[in-house]
Length: 359
Image 1 (cartoon, rainbow, N blue to C red):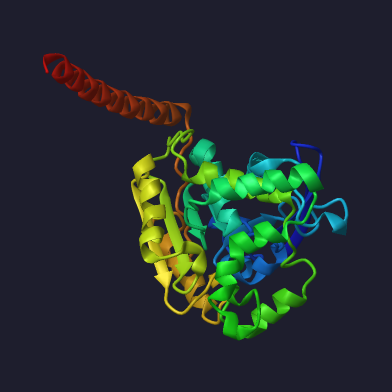
Image 2 (cartoon, rainbow, N blue to C red; image 1 turned 45 degrees about the horizontal axis):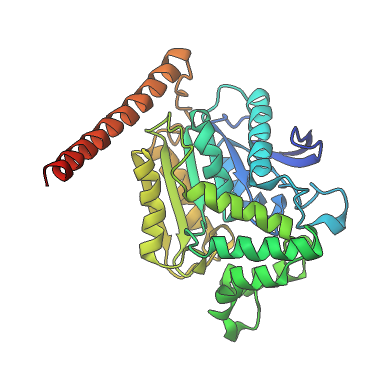
């Protein structure tokens, strides 16, 4: 069962357009899943996955990110973020979380992001991981070491042409190599999916494939910086189950070593339960691939394995309490960890200083 909703963003008053897919009457609700879609697409593309999850009792919520779908003031604003930056995307996502939890209380909460959305959900987790019972990172871009160069180019363009300028240059710098890898397929979006029909529909849909403005590329740059930085992570929910999923032929993760580094980054921050899986033969949009139901099934099995959702019969797994005591213990644990690290660093500094003094 589907229903729409709208929320006014606290960032700037922009109306955010959302969609809910609920389990049919008689199906026990097992969890609440919020989705964060990717760049240059819109929420309805996730309906097949949402309907699959709803059949298993999961209430699914998604909204069009600002500058996408119906979360725009006019069609001409597709690809324009209204100056909100990456922080605005994250705040919008959290605002939808608050709304969804009020509408569907007392359910385990799962957050899942694809591509650009995977950057949004990890930046969200920096401050709000206590809200989560599971985090799924799908089709994630690996750390981009040329990010500062792209930012410099974008600011130079914007200074001359304005923030709303659609940047073909930044688009080519960001995705040109992805398209080149599948040049024989005669489509600049062939890297997105191995199913030609999905690629054709994407190309023909005016709500897909639009070029980002410099303003939107600034937001993307913000998200990359925040996601792969080490500053600002609260890590109050260290046992949070985190799952990375990507297509084996997705150029977005660059290579297996870089995919593993993305996973290791979360572990280094302090998350203890981080796993990853690659699907050979699949490209960027694994939720739209020919074997997409294999991915859907794997997500469901992982949620059951991690005891986020109930058993096969639909018995809901009890949600972990978010009591003040639990949160206080997590904060203290985080503080203790940081203190111990500081003590170790001070010890190293003291020994080095002593050695330099002696010599």
